Length: 313
Length: 260
Image 1 (tube, helix red, strand yellow):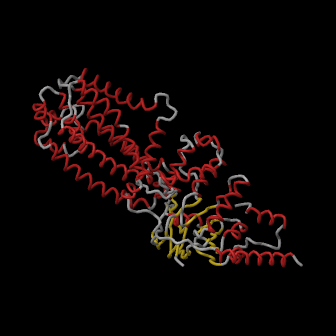
Image 2 (image 1 turned 45 degrees about the vertical axis):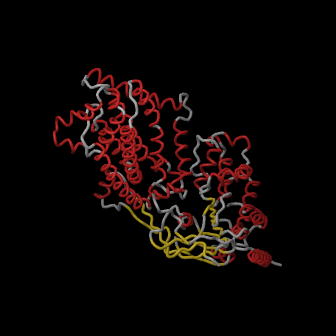
Image 3 (image 1 turned 90 degrees about the horizontal axis):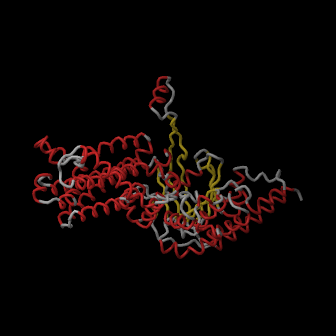
């Protein structure tokens, strides 16, 4: 028998065995529709898979201070030193004569820091998770949203410090103040998520966008009434001060100051009249509405860019 | 029979960009060099896979196998045409992608399982079985960054294989791991196939395709070159080359699907 014949016979035998096997096999019944395998319900998909989101957030948090001796303690040291620095320069050197200026400043710092962290980390989020994005079928909105939540977690130490200072100065929480803080926080969370979504996708195509973000965040510190009071803005610009309030971060800072700083001053009512715009809450709600519209826009843009993300990474 | 994977005229275009920075683009434009070029990684690919079939996807390097697998898996979307699947998909594609080197094996296990679509309860239920399969011993609770490449692969493989999916994708996965582990993997894959799940298997090894699959799809430059019987498909690719083969070699290959 020649080699070819032997090979052929072997092949035949294998073939018949295989067919036997196929006959025995019963296809499993799948109770699901025929659908595109890629998820495309955007942010909704992210909240449907909350468990994965929570794991991603936990991973970010525990990876951040891994191998560090002081660990989470750094989250207290950083805002405290930032506060000390600003306070020394602005309150001690450039004395503006504002009551409890440290709180005025720190309330702003906490929320501004939340925004810049979300924006910055969110912009990098997809590029940083390259390995996952290129190889696994995960809704990609997951990463900017996870960055936003991680930044929110790191707001906690700052808030704890802030509340401690306020209580030390005789501050007691009032319902309107708490509502103001929540509104301010929501506003920043929505804007942060929207910007993180948009810029995280854009950053895949041109890494220039992370530089754009750095430049933008530098403006934030000075475009909000934090190192100067709002009363100075309204004095200088009069009725044009309303344009200043078009900046959502300025509004969010004012809302935070309403919640914390206003309550620490001696005459709260006088402070509210002097240092806050009249329709603080109304403007706040309008800003939230605009932020939601922007979020929808960002999601749309993200979906369009997303198709090209795996190949451009 | 119900369709499990349906591809209808699927086309995926990739763009090669030669220049990215403004300096490069200006110079290239001045010299009238092309700035980018595009090609079809997949070109009008159509096929239907029935539930319970096991398909071997073959083809030379660069023929579009991995891209097709990414489309089936939902990592990419087709530029034209439609890709439809039925039920949950899992697979041995890039196992261990997304492992965080600083986290422990156990933490990564939970995270990776969640990425593959498992819930917390499901992960906990299968935990023992996964840990058993990965066979990491005391290293389960040390950072993955310190793992050897075999351990890394074993963990990724163990998680992926425990996802209860309807469609199972496998991409040249057995290249890592020692012989006993590869043996275990092959058995597990046969088990998956025999449980009536759809198997989509990418391989260069004729022997393992012969062993695992009952239909072969051959891609050639992004087009379907052949779709049908296994033996004929392997012959089409000229991978069988039976007459010139050293019997000892072929035996070895038959035994384990050596170069997979």
